[in-house]
Every structure is written in structure tokens, then in C-alpha cells.
Amino acid sequence: MKKEFYVSGYAPRDEKGIIRYCVDTETREITGISHVTGIESPTYMVPHPNGKIIYSGEKHSGEGEVVSYALKGREICVTAKLPTGGVSPCHVSLDPSCEYLFAANYASGSLAVFKLDESGALLTRTDFRQFHGHSVNPLRQESAHLHFSLCTGETVYACDLGEDIVWVFDFDRRNGKLIDTERNIHIHPGDGPRHLAIHEKHPGFLYLITEMASTVYVLCEKAGRYEVVQKIRSVPEPYNGPENTAAAIRFTSDGTRLIVSNRGDNSLAVFQVLKDGTLTAPEFGTSGGDGPRDFNIFDDILVSANQFSGDIAVYRLDGTHLIDLGIHTCYGHPSCVQPVF
Figure 1: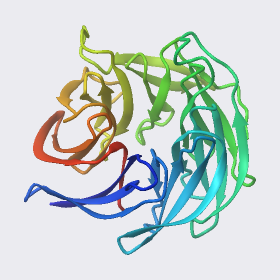
Figure 2: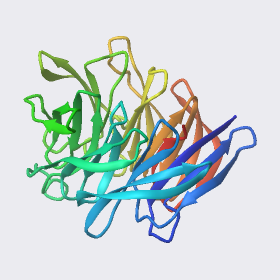
Figure 3: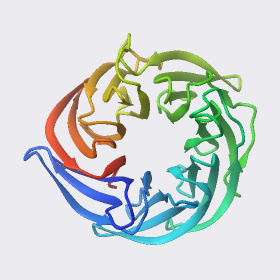
Figure 4: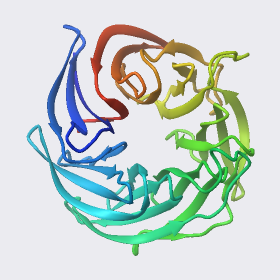
């Protein structure tokens, strides 16, 4: 079986920032098909479902940018850039209709919204929100740190690790504007909300991973407020290993399992999703390297991006078990894995 996917990460301008790979699980080979250089640290990216465009952030010493790339055959070419209004864009995402692109600026604690045309080309920035708070950890939460955004169409969620808040906005799709609500989710001080996921069969539920507490929050909206249904750790209990920071959270395509990556424990926690939307205790498998900042799942194939050891590992997912296929390749400091449409 062959699968193609993109990997991006921390890279200087003269090195490969985004690489398109093909993995053959029968021959156990992984090959870099094409790449792009000239972009500084495209640490997170998102492909357009039309299969013709990719978007990423670009980190500079000053103001960051969002970048669009044209896909011509298997080649990747930079087409446009727009400033994000903040520093260190660490996450980009699309709304479901692919009319807008969102960029989370980690270092400066802000969120930017960009309008796209019908082909997916970048047009203009339509909104910008600067956040100003802090929380209890003086090293990690001295100011706002936006880490992630997700637009469901009418609602935008933004994870603020620095303030221990998930901001919840209504979204004016006509004008590309964020509208304040009273539904913001306040997380236990010091936990550090990082990323979240939603489940198609459980509307109203949010699955949030907290980086600093390595805990999954299962939340459910009731009467306009989000209540905690379950909190469950993403590391073995009791945990006596190295300091751990949780990173990515994703559902399998069939929605039966939720997976979280752990940096420190260097593991992947695989939870089963029960009929009521809660999670079972996790099974654990190795990430195949040090610092799994991201991973992605393609049918029964899981690709882990290990930032600190600088490699990519490929597994087969069998129920809640990860089977090492012995497929590894080196890549600077990988931080994002996304599908090829």
C-alpha cells in the first residue's frame, strides 16, 4: 500500500521546509518526492481540499506571515504571503467552506483571519485579535500564547496556552469577523490548553489536550456553557518518567479512537471512544523518536513527526495497538504531518 503526505517543520530558508513523501508499506520504503525551500520554519501547514494549494505560517525574527503554495503536479511553489500581525505563527487552519484561513501567533498571543477567493488564493486580512492576559506559570504563561484555532462554520475556537482559556467566538462569515461570546472555556490554572478535536457523531463535544498537564478534557456544551464530562491523562498512571508535554490530538477517520502524542514520555496514547462520547483508559505505543510534536493517520497508517530526534516514523494502527513497520527517515526538526488530497 502506498500513501503520500506532507511534512513541514523548523528549517532555515536554505533547507527543505515542506517535503512531499510517499511511503510504501509493502517494500518498507519512504521517498521524498518534492520539496520547497526559501521559507523560514513553516512549522504548521494545512492543505486545501482542492488539492491545488497548501498554506503555512512562516516564522521571522519579527512579524510572521502566512504563505500559500501552488501544487503543480507534485511540485510545490510559493505563490503569496501576507503578514499575520503577530510573532511566531504556529498554527493555520481553514473554515469548512475554505473561504477563510486562520493563523495563531504563539509568541505575541494573537489570532488573524484571512479571506480567500474561490480558487483558494490569499486576498486580505479581515480580522485580528490581540489577547493580553496571563496565568500561573511564570515561565510558560507570562502572557497570552495562542496555539491553535478551529472553525466549525459558525463558531471559532482558539486555544490560549498562556491564559488557560479556550476562546469561543461566533463567526460572521459574510465579513470574516470574530464576535465575542460568553461561552469561553476556562481551564484549570497551569494546565495550558494546546489543541482540540471535534467528533462528527458527538455534536456539542470538544476534546481538548492540555500541554502542561498532559490531560484530555472531554467537554460538552449544555445551555450555552461547556461542562467538563471527563478528564483523563495522556501518560501512564502513575507517571514517573521525564517531564512530559502533550502535543497533538486527532481522531481516526472512523471516529472510534482518539490519539494523543506525548513529548517526554515519547509515546502515542490511543483511547477508544465510547458510545456516550467518553474515553477508555489509553493503550500506549512508542512514537519512534524523541519529541512527537505531530502525527497524522491515513486509514490504518500512522505517521509520527519526532521534532527533537529529527525523524519520521511509520506505524500500522491495529485497534488500539501500534505496530512498528520499521520505516524511518530523517527530516531536520519535523513538526506537522498533513494529507495529500
